[in-house]
Length: 170
Image (cartoon, rainbow, N blue to C red; front, side, top):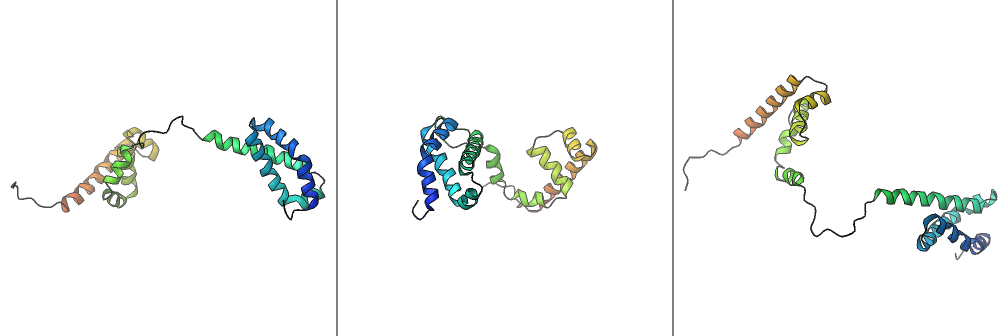
């Protein structure tokens, strides 16, 4: 608090204990209560001249504490804490397959939009023809013909880049 306005320093000294108690009621933890009071007072310190003019520093800091607590609570609610650290990393075969098929993605990107969408929905999303038709707002027959054409283009490209073999093993 070095260099802080004397009125602000006096406010902090006079209210610290009651603010920590208020924080304890909000959080249920003395450590979190102190953190909450400290963060709210830091914010009050930067807004001190404006807040003092309105003659409401106590209301400001308590409102700030309540809002900070709600914000922290929401953030923690989204987290899913694990009781134990996993022994090994999570394995996702889908990600491994994508990495292994890196040369496939430029080919897929070269297909027309509808053909690409049909293939992705069918083979990566594992959707049925009816679901694809509904999602793309096209008929089931169009889904099947677009998939046929897209696969034919991919096969043709694969056949062009396949090395010829002599048939002999050696």
